[in-house]
Structure formats: structure tokens, C-alpha cells
Image (spheres, rainbow, N blue to C red):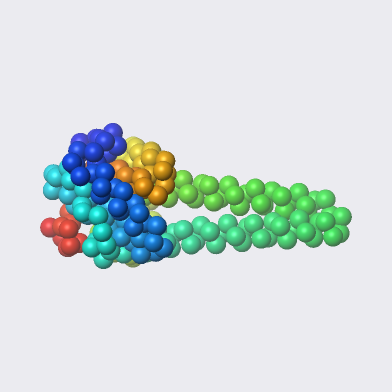
Length: 218
């Protein structure tokens, strides 16, 4: 893996890629457990790439422990984004309701703007998570859940290698789009693409972690 563009096609270099992708994608259907397993599987793929092996890990639940920290970190970020969205939306609709009951045109306009703002915040937050996905994963592997939630550290990492972060985010989006093509059976392909993005990204930032497949420092 030498370039972000390599992340798109590397999974098919594994002779058994179709079966691994389909099975891991179907496992992902299981709520929570499936998502943790998929994250762990993705990180195990990163480990293989770090070791120079263009090989997908075997599909299954065996990497759940490997993916728990990253899963929890993204769960927190998603929860915060959704909470902000809900607060803004509820307040906006409350103003719209008050305007309808009291013929308050200005309140209605403000409420409508808040509803639009809420959806805008949600969309921008989703994009930000994609573009910070690689730094967040690397920071989590360095410092556990606390490292992954250290937003100033993550932003500093992203800014230190701005072009690398930009390209990592773009290819993370591409991976997400590929994974959503046939949601139930291709989602793991998107995760494999993300593994390639992370493997390239961490080589381009200072003091990148090198972890073995059990999560310990190599």
C-alpha cells in the first residue's frame, strides 16, 4: 500500500475476498455486535497491511476485542452529533408551533431557520467524521478511548498533515459509497477500503503507532 488510490482495489488481491466480504457484511446486520466485529475486522486488515500482506482477515467475530475502543469512540461522537441535532430541531419546531398559535411570523421564520440549521449541522458533522476518521482511529490506537476523544489532539494531527488528512477523508467517503452500493453484502468492502486508507495515512504522520494483531505495540 503506497498510495490512497491503492486502497480501492487492494481487497480483491485476496483470492478469498468475496466470501470474506459477504460473510462479514452479513455479520454486520447484527445490532451492535455486528458493528463491533466489523470495526475489529477492519483493524485486523490494517494490521495485515502494516505487515505487508495484502490479505483480508478471516470473517467472523474473533476480532471484536480489537474493535471495541474504536467503536466506542465513534459511538460517542455520533451521540454528540445527534444530541445537538435533536436539541436544535426541537427548539426550532417549538418556535414554529408558538408562532402558529400566536400569529408570530418572526418566531416562525427563526424556527424554520433553526430546523434548517439542525439538518445542516448533522450533514456537516457527518462529513467531518469521515474526514477525521483516519486521525481518530490512529489516535484511539495510540491512546485508547481517551486518545480517540481528545479532539484537540486529533485536530492537531489532522492539521499537521493537512493534505494527507484531506485525501484520507476523500477516500474514506469513496469507501463509504462503495460499502453502501448493496448495503447488506458490500459494507465490509467499504471497511476494507478504510483499512487501506488508515494504513497509508499513519505512515504519513509523525510517531504513527505500529500495533500487532492483538492490539499491543509491535
